[in-house]
Length: 302
Image (cartoon, rainbow, N blue to C red; front, top):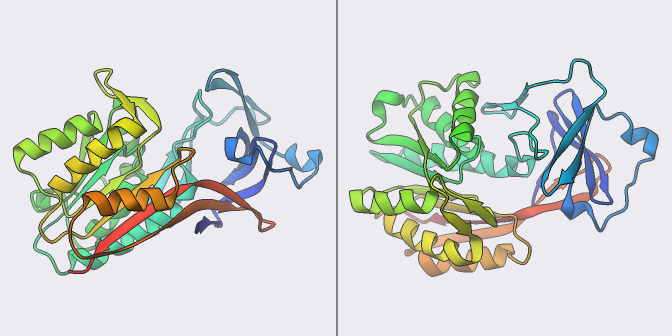
């Protein structure tokens, strides 16, 4: 199990389909389907400390109600190796999934370790969202002295189908002091990009994937996890370098656990590697655990 708790982010309580969280100095009350089976532990008066509450009105969309005036349009969250700009959205998201913190530390450590013994290190980050995993890898490259001018041999390819989200990621790089890090920002459908890279003969030393259950590409391409993930993994396996470093696969889809993700990685990726996996989760300040997705990792023994 990869469990997250920390000083800049804190899960205060959860239950009845909601979670109470602190992001920096801002406390938020948001929907959380994994919290549905649980009971809240703290009294209503404790939950009333929330500065903002999001409630859905139609599908995933909804609205925020704020006790702060003016309501915050954005604020910064420090994660350790980089910073993220948080913005309340119409679907209740903020631009960060805190359950990924442990993976970000792992990505940074793996990248730092592997690039020391390589003449090149290229990372492919698919479904990259606002860039947490991208910046975890890029910060390790940057700390090792790699800059944008080194991007032929050392870079992170950040791929997301939403142009506005890619721009958000660029902003995160800037506030993290990583605007000169070797990052390629790409607004494109993940599968289409992987297939195009195959035709170009590109190879990657590491691959990171956080696919949704369902989504759309830049030209309306439909993504369905059960149908398209095997196709994408096959393409990524063909893109992997002869002496690869690692692959990280995460998912938030009901019915798909870490063992299933691990089996898929072992099926498609060749070579002598060690594998690990487990549930991603958030630990509340009272020690309760909120399940928050699944992770599978493989690291090659080079």
